[in-house]
Amino acid sequence: MTPAPTFQPLLDALPYAALVVDAKDRVIATNDAATQLLGWQAQGLLLVNVLRQPDVIATLDAVRGGADQSTARYLSRKSEGRVFDVVARPLGAGQVVLSFVDVTAVEEAGQIRRDFVANVSHELRTPLTALIGFIETLQGPAKGDAKAHERFLGIMLDEATRMTRLVDDLLSLSRVESTERTRPSGLVNLAELMGTLKEYYESQGNDHTIQLDVQTAQTSTVGDVDQLRQVLSNLIENALKYAPDTPVTLRLEGPVYARELRGEALKLTVMDQGPGIDPIHIPRLTERFYRIDTHRSRAMGGTGLGLAIVKHILTRHRGALKIKSALGQGSSFSILLPAI
Ligand SMILES: Nc1ncnc2c1ncn2[C@@H]1O[C@H](COP(=O)(O)OP(=O)(O)OP(=O)(O)O)[C@@H](O)[C@H]1O
Ligand SMILES: [Mg+2]
Image (cartoon, rainbow, N blue to C red; front, side, top):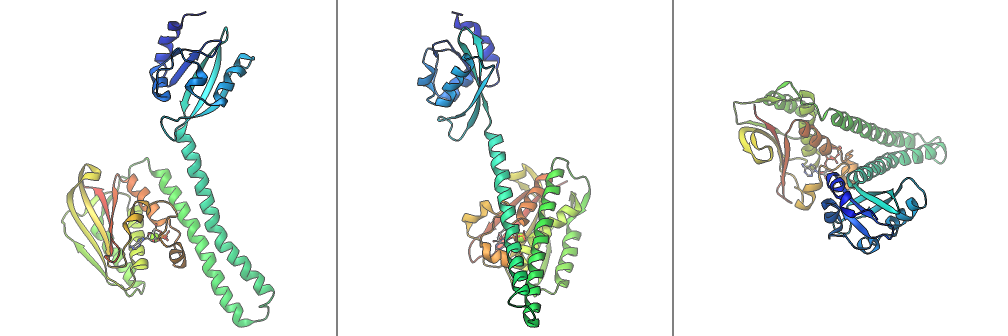
């Protein structure tokens, strides 16, 4: 039998966990990564006693039976939730090398994609179901009823508008994601941008007053003006929607030291005096489709993508979003952007 130490330098040189078993399934060599993965030093033990996962044991028989390679999934018991692809390859004389590649990240990405598709489908199906229902009613029971026609067509327009908004937001999210790796290069005057948005939203016939509070002479930073306009619009629209009939304040301050950015930052805050947010929701607000009151938000045309878009744009700008709120005390959403 080949003496075990021959394998050792090779196993030690590998960037992932690996071990060799002899013809009797006894572990004859392992590397440090394998010891960490399994939770103990396996050398000299039978493989079945080391990892009690029948699928992995079955790979040994498969390669001894003539297969070039056999693979299995290994769910680590030691590091909870981690998933590995195990590849077995024959070394001759019944010996087999097993290597463990960590595929947790790939698995998680797949799960996120599946959740995303499920969410999008659900969000699109709701208005579509409503549209089909109204069309059937117009063709059937409400045929010739002019009043019903007018009312139903109004609802149908709302539902179709919602779908358009959802698709626009999704496109905008994917555009932001695709630019995330390139840093913006323009120079943006934040005070000017805030002023333009204040005028715009006041002209929209809201009952809100929007106060502008610029507390600094340093008003410019490097950024993408269209994206920063979108960030501010999303925050202002939320304030107008979820804190109706109360004043909204837009404040610019800085430079202040921001721990999140490990440096000086300009701080731009959108504040309202609305109902506030229960702190348990705050960490999840920037998740796609996350809404506190799904029904209420949907009734107001919300899709739950606004803050996800904000977060991605700020990531591209090497900035951060800070949310402060408590029930009954209004909300303040601050964006931190690196000062220049
Ligand atoms: N200023 C605020 N006051 C109270 N709740 C808020 C405020 N801003 C956001 N929220 C809550 O956070 C949730 C997520 O906001 P987000 O902007 O991501 O989505 P949305 O407004 O529902 O939809 P969209 O922005 O895509 O139209 C909202 O549904 C709402 O429940
Ligand atoms: Mg919103």
